[in-house]
Length: 204
Ligand SMILES: C[S@@+](CC[C@H](N)C(=O)[O-])C[C@H]1O[C@@H](n2cnc3c(N)ncnc32)[C@H](O)[C@@H]1O
Image (cartoon, rainbow, N blue to C red; front, side, top):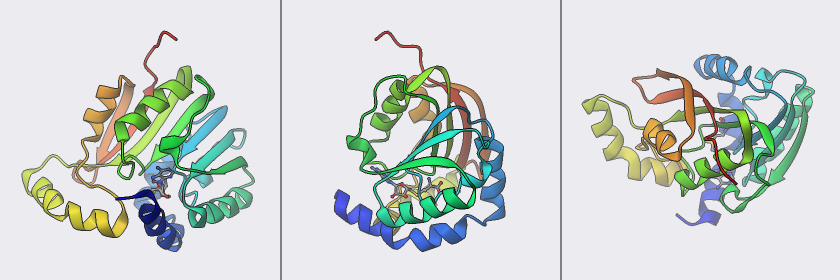
């Protein structure tokens, strides 16, 4: 799908994402994960800022998304939660930061929508400081045959409606990227993954 169409799909869902921030299950997962953020934080594809209630108050956040409608809501959420945050409205797949810019990189429910998820994981690896933290809450292909069959059958339709793939092998993609998983938890029929990780050690 081309970028402009994808942006329109997410712009249209901004109000829904604003409401979904109240979902108790998601709040629990976000709280568990986001409390590990520290220092200079990059939040990728921030959406409506559903993670904002859970950041420690002393972090400095750079948040990016290509949907201006999502960012409007995220800016309001940052203000409500008194967070020190800057916002960038851009396609992350075309963006670059100097290597080792951030102490923490956060990506929640985003690997499903990138056109090149491996490319984005490589960027996380590069942009995170050595010994820094990469925090992921991502959904993908489950592990039970009945579930995965349904996911595969519905994926083309769901992608056209929501701009989001349901068949990505999250753990496989993260492992292939070289990112070092320190801790992982699975929920919702193993479709949702919470991952605490560190970047791969790299020679520049
Ligand atoms: C499923 S939503 C998740 C939002 C948020 N991370 C959360 O946890 O609620 C996916 C978000 O990724 C953004 N997005 C998808 N592809 C992007 C890209 N290439 N560059 C920037 N933002 C992107 C969409 O605009 C949308 O806000």
